[in-house]
Length: 76
Image (cartoon, rainbow, N blue to C red; front, side):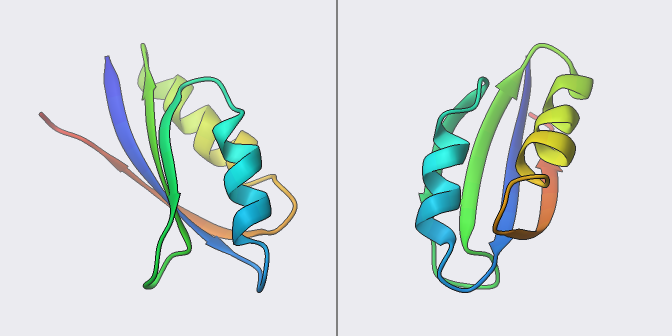
């Protein structure tokens, strides 16, 4: 099982919209609006690294209102 954290930077005023859309994706276990450099933190799980990268690079990055993402794979 691959476990990752995806940090999402959104356009101004779009955090709640992005949060709602992200929570509907398969493989997302948690997602929260946060204060700091990024606007939303997403916790994802999948069987393969490719699946997590697909979620981050295509599903989330392609959403309306998403400006940038950074993905961090858990090593434990």
